[in-house]
Length: 159
Image 1 (cartoon, rainbow, N blue to C red):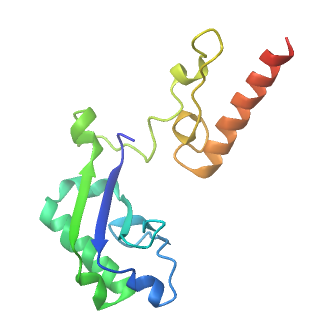
Image 2: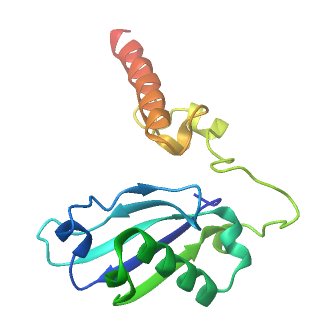
């Protein structure tokens, strides 16, 4: 996920659920492009998490936080400003040194040829959305990649 910027905002309660909202949002008009309810199963911890537009790396941490909280406020109301904590992670800072003059589309590094290989004498395969050459980073890519590996395993078993 080196092309991704992930964020999380923790809350004392899932106020969005109280308003009848799922917490899932896809946006082309804010810094957060995908937002998901990330409450735990026991309903004792509550957060909204998701992905930021790649251009968010040009903002400071405080600027990103302010823009995300404002965006959540537009969607869910003033309660969005009453958060416990905000965190985000620019994965490019961790794994690669980006050339900020180069545009990299979302999920540009998915489908690497290393994922085409099997390992440990055909006993270990890697599959998932990041391994897909098509629709990498999305559920469609995960399904396509997993179906391809399932077909390979099926052929191995039949031998």
